[in-house]
Length: 433
Length: 143
Image (cartoon, rainbow over all chains, first blue to last red; front, side, top):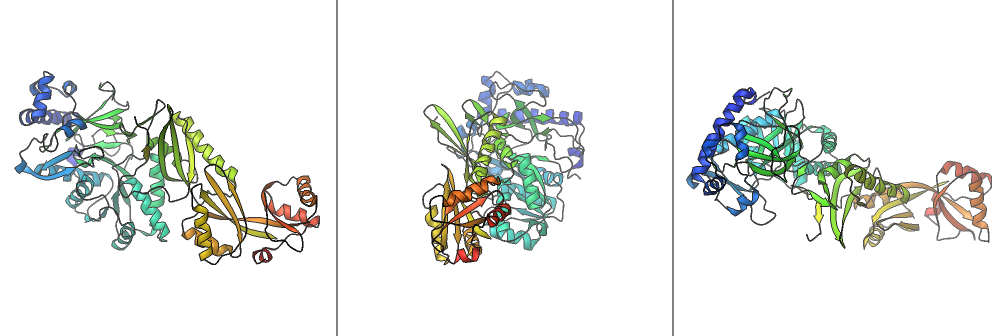
């Protein structure tokens, strides 16, 4: 099933011709309207007109999150303010938030891409979409909302929080599609269980989860506990918001990135060089239809790889693999690169451990230490010390074997690790680096 | 012959024991015997109480991880070598003691020891054959 069959299945030569045309007009637009881009292209000795093929994209300089902060709030806007109809901002955990603006056409494109994403995930007109992404400056809530309406589904704009009420509404309103962060879906499952509600008796069929990295094993856990098909969605406010890329329900192998609107590249985050198909590196995206705030070669800091292999669903758009983490979520512990999502994947694979965990990094003298707090589940709890100690040793050993980093596992009481109703906080880094 | 013991997982942080005993006290539950096993990170509190089912449910309601284990209460003559005789008997039958602790009250002048065995039923048979006296749970809970 497609939302826009013609564009979703456009043969690659036609798709690439369209990308080039759109890229060229975007470059003209930013060069003429955004002083930052004029300065950065001029500094690199590049005029937009030199781009005569998609390969030439590599000659252009990157745009970074820091560039967006330096242009706070509206410095990178390429449209006059009287054409901007919506403003969103990222959560800005470090310093000022990054601000993005949308024209009417940008909102229309976003709605379409989000509607395409819903259809790819297996949703359709007639579905009742329970949208538990936060509404507000965060793009998640409104982004999914507009796509759901364009699709013609019934959208429940419940936003995040008040989990008991969420569960009651899902049950009473007959929600069929759930959209929220993966960690929040597991929190819902836990709350429902405490209330004696079985997800098997709910009508949920599909869950569309994103806004934080999660693992394949967490997918299995969510599908089992919530009794639905769990789909990974990707997006970031700088590029648009949710709906930049999505898994198709047919394959669930990689997320189709809507290439008629975005050009993806994978680079080596250290050198900035473009990497060949299939290699893991940092995802860089160029927007080619955006008017409000087009971005050229934006460094997402997300680590993934790219494949152009045809997909069984019939979409011609490239796929990015599930995010293995953000380059800035990456912890370097005694020289070893560790992503919280890798540790999560190991923990979920160990029988009896709840998928709630916290990583605590400290520096003792000159040595980094990693403590992994995991919750002991009721099924696992044994009244023999040796059984529990064997469990923590197993956690330590598996992490050492798989990631090459020594850690200390600490078993904690169930439900004591802080639950989040939005993006889960998984790391406490006490080092002053 | 088996006695019901409840075990509670506790993190080593201040106030957890106080919290458990407060919850049990408010629920009117009397602790008959207890043992605390601990490591540097966590501990296991093992209790024999006058109402195990109620204790389990109030602790779970308060977010504790609880499980129930079957243990055996054996009367031990209060004289040198009393405990040794029991342990030698078990050793000959290759029954392992996972842990043990003493009961506070005496029973007809004898001490009472709570045992957790790897093979509970076999241990009961062996002790019975050798005429060691074991106490029924119902008697212990209300001693």
